[in-house]
Image 1 (tube, rainbow, N blue to C red):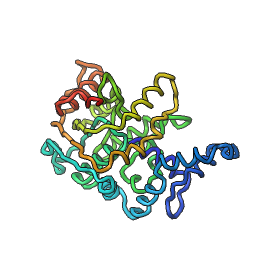
Image 2: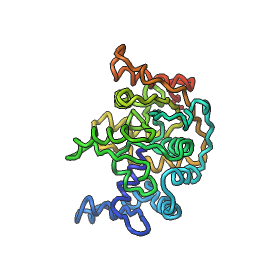
Image 3: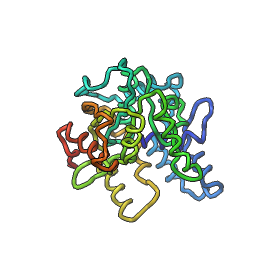
Image 4: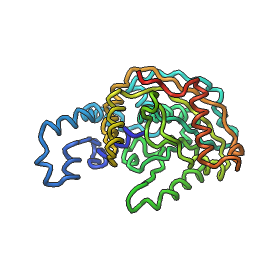
Length: 296
């Protein structure tokens, strides 16, 4: 969902009637008077990178939608061709149970939007993302989000927000890697999965549904992410390119593979929670018959 975080950081600054995204206003809010020293060509480049006009048009045209209908509008706008394998493994919505859906995160945007649309449609909108609270500024997404602020003075709220999500009567959709996939060992693969989905699924007795989502970003994106890591940048520069990556990935086919639910009792003391997280991560890739997409 990282490209949505970027949109939120932008849209947060200009929540007017038209919900207009304005790169210059963002720069002024962050830099104050120093913005006058930013060359015009840099501002124009950032506008193109964020696809300011196109995104504004989409947000305005779909201003009356929210939740699942907004997510489905995103899928239609992105012209995503989706094939779902193992759809029979999605639990019956009438079985009276709540589930934790976990997936790899290859794209950083379309994967989250698409899976939200699938799960929202299947379970009548009764699901929630655990997301960075910046996403709460996207009105269409707000109804299906539980915002989590992991940084700054509000960091202490992170455990409380996670509890809120798992205590709710909604299914949970998570991307345990946090960031979207990187180029690792010549393949597009997630960073190591965090253990939160394991510990909370056990605590609240939610079976875990593993989902694989195909897809990749451009070679440019992986080069940027690589050099960002090499030079030790703490700012996620690669995230700035995710909106552009989203547009590069329009009109493409994506494969979704749903695995059989894993009973919460599986996650016992034979392994540490982080080891169980690795077990589920491996299972996601194995059920799709892949260790990750090769970087070609």
